[in-house]
Image (cartoon, rainbow, N blue to C red; front, side, top):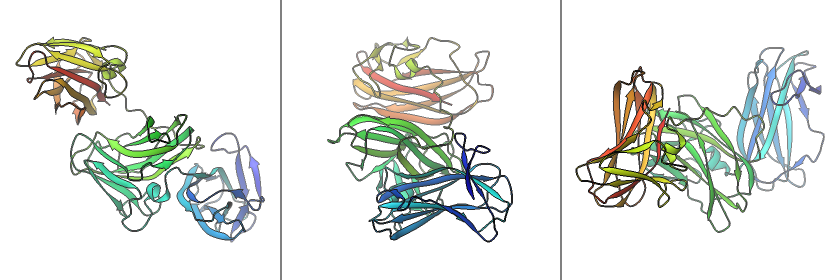
Length: 443
């Protein structure tokens, strides 16, 4: 029997209560033949289940794709194999075959006996903005969908790890200071304006402190970039984790491009990603968003969008906020060198920015305005509560006429209470100009 109940709910206040009345199998189905209209393409299949009675219970969401004549073209099964008193998710990314016009859904299983009850909630059959092979890596042997290396990376279809199915995308990092993977199907995937849910699953392969970001770039019919959004992971671990964000594709959106990108990792590190989702609307009952990766520096000191932040000249330099150059946004920090043999800028907010001990990512972007052979070093000093310096770490960068990125994963020592940041170097002569942006100490 199937009833709506308020005794359990994964999302909202209601769920479907299924009471088993006989052993040897049970099932509930839809009564709206020819079922729900749909179309071929990549799909997201998911539901949530739990039980408060019985043991060894399972539930399968059976998704049946039919053509206009009602003929069955394909059946997909999503199973939660062992229900407990805690809500669990059944999840599968699939591909509705050519000719699909309708979709039917059943809930069934061979487990359970008379008197057992199962609760089901948040049943989803939805379009995925990324094609099935790109989203799931379940395509032909060796296929990576539309993913290709972009910079400092190599990729492969992996059978050694998978969040769902049997494959994932393995990303090998080949150089420090950042890596990227992109798509080869320009103008990318067709898309529409409006609210979207972006999501992916990730786990670490080799290396520590490695993270990944799914970057969605919304484009108009001519390929012009309208907006870019990111889903940022925390440091990946040996366990699969889901990361997601709800964003709004701007007016005039016709296509979406996808990248995996991050500044963490060194040559030899690897990560795995799987089950990439671009969903129209808000996916019901997404997991809680991962905690942010906060920058210890205040927004102006980091991004220079509203003021110069806490930056002041230290030696042989002047500093100003400028709109002449920017890595992101419209502002950056302009440093003018006033004498040869070295320059430096520092912070004025002693005892500096509060922070705790532990792994950190320090990074900045820089470019040369005028002058040759310029370089810059981000010098980070960890202080204890009394102001004593405990340790310093450096990230150095050779500057050119285009934005360059420097990054390192370091560990603030035990006892760390505040962090000081300086920008300095021994290069340059009076009259040289440099620009800096997105200066970060991420916890």
